[in-house]
Picture 1 (cartoon, rainbow, N blue to C red):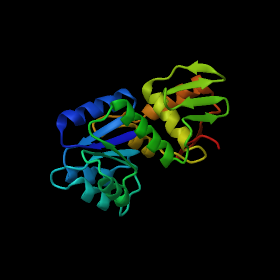
Picture 2 (picture 1 turned 135 degrees about the horizontal axis):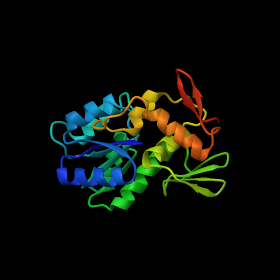
Picture 3 (picture 1 turned 120 degrees about the vertical axis):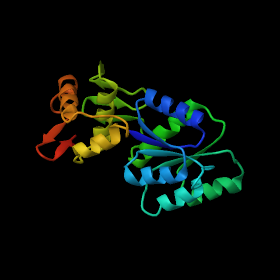
Picture 4 (picture 1 turned 30 degrees about the vertical axis):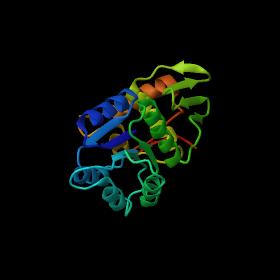
Length: 217
């Protein structure tokens, strides 16, 4: 899953990115509203973490423009905690908000919640036959036995399972599993799919030649 952080406090942005990357997310950062809006409109992020007090374009204006044509879940970071401020945020199109200062563990939990809500899958675990994907612990079991996966392999399993019954193209995988600074090899997805099949079972994911991959509904 890929997250965009729009935050002008560079130390905070760096800490947020480190926490998200350590939790298995691909993560991009923008330090002003104009750059943030450009990135939010250029890539299909799973969640956007948005500060309100931004140079060039403030968070309220960014959110309003984004909501004209994007439904990406947005978690707003704000120093204001009055009812009026919260109502304005929600009415502008925010999906959730956190008042500064906040705990990183809570922010990570809210990011997971927004991803589940956007996928219309409120439960923290995904079940595909005998395969169970724990999105909190970020682990996979097969018939109750742990399955060893690399962070990227786990991310791909979760991404495919969240789109169960839908065709997932290579382009979608690259866009959601890698940030803007990562270099990817042309055959890396094939390698991950091969490893996943060895460990989870060949029937877990099917290849549609020339189109992409699909986990059956």
